[in-house]
Image (cartoon, rainbow, N blue to C red; front, top):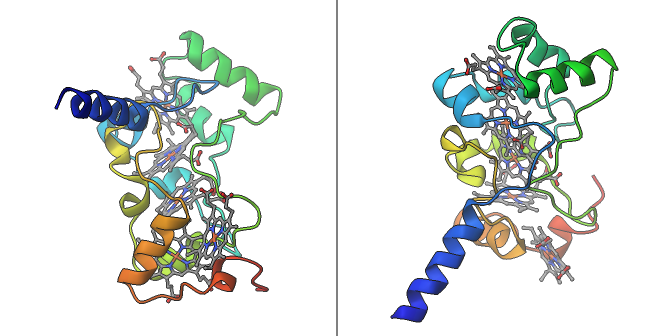
Length: 157
Ligand code: HEC
Ligand code: HEC
Ligand code: HEC
Ligand code: HEC
Ligand code: HEC
C-alpha cells in the first residue's frame, strides 16, 4: 500500500512537471483566464503536419503595453527587437522516422485536449498525455484506423 502510494506520487510528479522554458509563459493565464483560442497562437499551415509556435510579434501586440516593465516581458521584447525566435523547449515530439500530421487528426474530429489534456489549466506546459507508439496504436485500434507498421513508418506521402 505504502509502495503504491509512493509509486503514484512519482507518477503524478512526473506527469505534472514540464521543462523549464526560456520565458515563464502560462497557458492557464492566456488560454484559461484570458480565454484566447488555441488557434490564435497555434495555426496549422499546409501541409498540416505542424501546429507551430506564435510569432513574437503576436505576443508583443499585447505586451508592448501589458506588463511591459516585468522582467519576463523585457526578455520577450529583446527577442522581438533582435528578430530572434524564442527557443521554446519542446514538450511533445515524435522522432523523425514517425510520420505525423496534425491536419489528418483534426480533420477526423479529434480535439487538442484528446492528446494534450486540459491545457487551459496548465501554468507550465507539461506532457500530461502519453503519445508513445503504444498510445497511438491504442487509439487507432479503438477508432478502427490502420496499425500497419508502414502506416506510421516509412510511408511515402
Ligand atoms: C497566447 C498564445 C498561446 C495560446 C492562446 C495557446 N498557446 Fe500553446 N503554446 C504557446 C507557446 C508560446 C508555447 C511554447 C511554450 C510552452 O510550452 O509553454 C506553447 C506550447 C504548446 C504545446 C507544447 C508543444 C510542444 O511540443 O512543445 C501544446 C501542446 C500547446 N501549446 C497546446 C495549446 C492548446 C491546446 C491551446 C488552446 C487550449 C493553446 N496551446 C493555446 C502559445 C499559446
Ligand atoms: C491578448 C493579449 C495577450 C497576448 C496575445 C499575449 N499575452 Fe501574455 N499576458 C497577457 C495578460 C493580460 C497577462 C497578465 C498580466 C497581469 O498579470 O497583469 C499576460 C502575462 C504574461 C506573462 C507574465 C508576465 C509577468 O511578469 O507576470 C508572460 C511571460 C507572458 N504574458 C508572455 C506572453 C507570450 C510569450 C506571448 C506570445 C506567445 C503572450 N504573452 C501573448 C496578455 C497577452
Ligand atoms: C491525435 C493526437 C493529437 C491531437 C488531436 C493534437 N495534437 Fe498537437 N501534437 C501531437 C503530437 C504527436 C505532437 C508531436 C509532433 C511532432 O513531433 O512533430 C504534437 C505537437 C504539438 C505542438 C508542437 C509544435 C508542432 O507543431 O509540432 C503544438 C503547438 C501542438 N501539438 C498543439 C496542438 C493543438 C493546438 C491541437 C488542437 C488544435 C493539437 N495539438 C491536437 C498530437 C496531437
Ligand atoms: C485519439 C486518437 C488518435 C491518436 C492518439 C493517434 N491517432 Fe493517428 N489517427 C487517428 C484517426 C481517427 C485517424 C484517421 C484519419 C482519417 O481517417 O483520415 C488517424 C490517422 C493517422 C495517420 C494517417 C494520416 C494521413 O494523412 O494519411 C497517421 C500516419 C497517424 N494517424 C499516425 C499517428 C501517430 C504517429 C500517433 C501517435 C503519435 C497517432 N496517430 C495518434 C486517431 C488517433
Ligand atoms: C500509429 C502509429 C504507429 C504504428 C502503427 C507503428 N508505430 Fe512504431 N512508433 C510509433 C511512434 C510514435 C514511435 C516513437 C515512440 C516514442 O518516441 O516513444 C515509434 C517507434 C518505433 C520504433 C523505435 C522504438 C524505440 O524504442 O525507439 C520501432 C522499432 C517501431 N516503432 C517499430 C514498429 C513496428 C515493427 C510496427 C508494426 C508492428 C510499428 N512500429 C507500428 C508509431 C507507430
